[in-house]
Length: 198
Image (cartoon, rainbow, N blue to C red; front, side, top):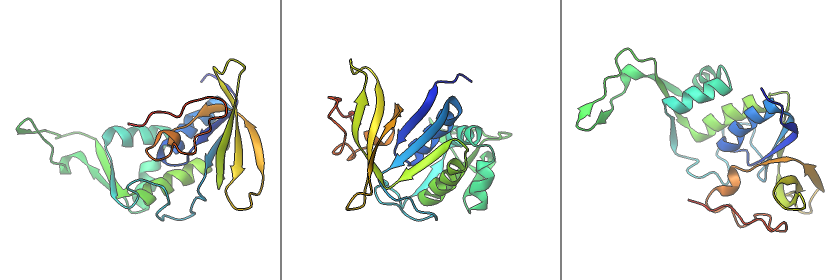
């Protein structure tokens, strides 16, 4: 796998951020996940997670990809009480007919969002080259002179008064920043416009 650099930073430690961190940790010397919320240790609802209290389904493509990223994750989910359902038990109706899944090894998993995110977060936290900074928020971006590349992010701790601030040299990834309702605090001092939502 191609080595891309020393440090990658992902803003947001929800599902998108967690799954971004896995391949980045393989291509960089280290990857840092930053989340402005203090992350729970258990399987509890988390502030700022859309539809966080709803039942979630991991469909076959997502479940397969998650297993490729984190081998054994399906068994971890099942051990945490997720319902892993094999294809012969499903009923899909498309175009007026039932989809024949006989003999398929496809599976789906149903669970609460806190369970899915918590199991994935535990696995990502256990990766050697991943650091999780919770309770920190992005405040500013550092870029190249022509602003074509983000080279750092200024972080500030969330408690009042803040514990401290720091610059973190980085390759930039921001799955959470594009989420609806999350653009108000977008760092704009480097003249970068916030991502469009929807």
